[in-house]
Length: 455
Image 1 (cartoon, helix red, strand yellow):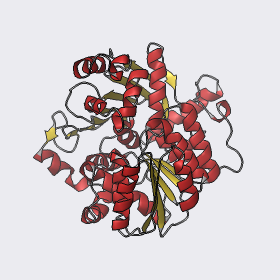
Image 2 (image 1 turned 90 degrees about the horizontal axis):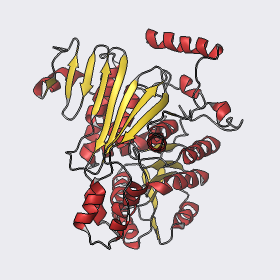
Image 3 (image 1 turned 180 degrees about the vertical axis):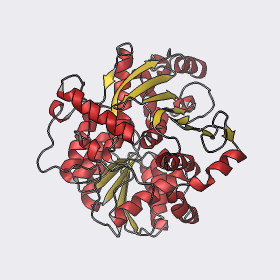
């Protein structure tokens, strides 16, 4: 901690001398209006009963609706989707769980506005295509609801600023639902970092490696029907948050100690999807009319204000085995995942990996308090998904709303993590030129409390 404080004090001196390059600060973007509220540590008034609505109830959204509808103190009031069968499927499930007054909406892309006006939800869960996340978040908040979006929170920096301004003006939460932050290993590592076992944190590595070319078979509807166009038209790290979110919270970025400064990004050749389309589909198929420009592997390096580094990688194209590479390195050792391994001074030989049974033995006492307190309850309610992390996230969101607590992931974190997408596109297009992160907090990150592990 003393090293960080000394560094920040030095940065203040350099700033006074005009030698430190500032981030995109308040004066460079826009001042916060006098009636707007900084949302970093925001806790909304308690909601003993949380009226919930859902926009997008396909594969992901139906899971949100199904699980959240099981939680005591929740009232499902509406679901909306472009497709009637999907909306009716989720509303049938909601009514079977006792939500008799829930209404289904479907058809045009603006039907969700009717749902917001008629059902007046407290919280809206958004699982729609990336390009409309920002619109749905903004309109939900304007309608008086807290917004909870799938990842990424938005696809452009301009959209992220609009989300920030709307949340601050309305006093409504807007959380990007990064479920990996609720994984057992990720929470374990967060606790170990907070306990100081790694010493001063220096470097992180984060990735999302997941072969998803098969989604291209979803031609008319489903994830592949819209996501495929992103791979064709955009070249950068379009999906950074599953890996980056946990590492950013280990490092306490955008919370008191440190924040995002800049990144550089490079892409490999874009070969895999063009080859896959030619192999799997007729020559006149619409996928063969696209020139896939997004590199098969994207690699970004983030630099923080304190000079720490994070490597972020993304590959959803090649047949490489699944990995959410998850590494955090400090002055006293390193924790990593896929497979889970540690090499930490004081926990055995710091120059050799402890894994398997040895890993479990050395880390058992550092299990995160949230896992100890909630996992049995989540399992008993049958809240599933991605090894249990989805259920933990959904339960925790509702708990925070019911008890009037700050959320575990605030508005600004979702924007910082998602900003890697558009910033990496610009960096790649400019030969790897460094790109500065906007400061979505307008300097308030220095006053934002660290994420507590005592929950």
